[in-house]
Image (cartoon, rainbow, N blue to C red; front, top):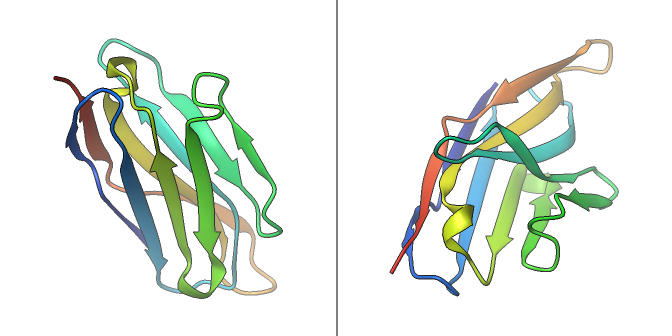
Length: 120
């Protein structure tokens, strides 16, 4: 299983970006799908999570500004980021817990990371 993340870049404070992460390979189910980030000098942080039914969770620091969503048919998770702040600057990583067939155990996979820089 591979996760391919995209969508990072440079944006001004107050701007928006949308990250995408597509999973490919032997996939029966994915649950949950997560976005993490690690900013300069900061610890790895769970930003948002979504499960198959659509329930979501967010870090307090991004509530009301970020929206996680998923397209189950495409095995893809998105992170819409609005009202971006300089403190959102980080490498963002997608993470997915995958069951490759009905009888297999769940295994966690990581994308390669995409850099988001919020600066004027």
